Length: 287
Image (cartoon, rainbow, N blue to C red; front, side):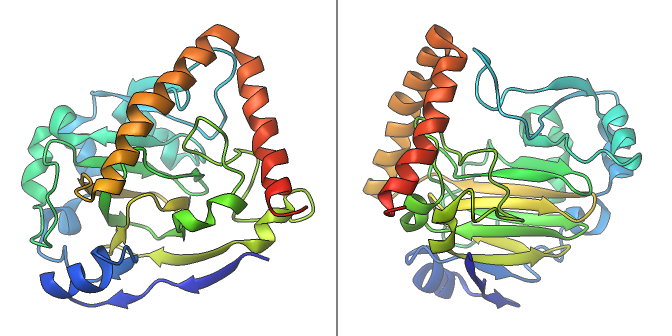
C-alpha cells in the first residue's frame, strides 16, 4: 500500500527557519496563523465573490482527460460565476475553477491578502485561485514552472497528498505531460491494476481554513475536496539553476512537442502515451 507520513504543522515560523529547514531542503510544511489578519481569512465566501464579480464569466475544468486533438487540461465550459456557484450549492462534484488569476480577473481582491515576508521572490502578477465543491478531485500532477508555492486555504477542509520528485518512477507519469494517468484514483488505489503504487512513499495533510501549505518545486500533488473551499496559490519562480532549467525544458520543449503531436495525431498520440505510462512504470519496478 502507499505509505504516508503526516506533513509537519507549525503555528508560526521565522523567515530564517523557513528558508533553512524547509525551502532550501525542499520539504513541505503547513503554517498556521500566517493569514490570520487577512481579509481573505475573515470574509471570503461564495457570497463575497458573487457580490464582487457574480456576472463575470469563468472557465471551468473537470477531471476527464482531454480527447483527440483537444489540448491538455482544456476548459470544459465557460459560464457566469454566480451560475457556477449555484451548481456547487446544488451538489456539483466535478467542475472546478482552476488557476484563476485574480490580478487579471478580479483585481479588487488583491486588497484581501499580502505576500508574506518568507524569503521568497514572489511573482506578484500571478496569484491564482482554485475553487471546487464537495467530492471534487484534482488529478495527480506537478507544476510545470517548478515554483515554490504557498497554498493559502480557506473554507471547508480539503485533503492534499504530496510526493517528492524521487517518487516519479512509481506514479504512472504520462510521457510529455505533467500528470499521472487520470484513471488512477490515488484516494482509493487499485493496487492490482496499478501495482507500482505499492512502492510509493508520500506525505499528506488535511488543510483547514487559514492554513498555508508550502509545496516545494516539482512535488506531485493530488487533492480532494471535503466541501466547498478555495485556495490561493502564491508562487515564487525557481532561482535554483537546476529547477530553472527544468522549468525551461517543460515550457519550451515538453509542452510544445505535446501540443504539436496532439494536433497531428489526435487520440492515437494520447493512447500511445497512456499505454507507455502503464507499461514503462510496471517494467521500471520489475512488475
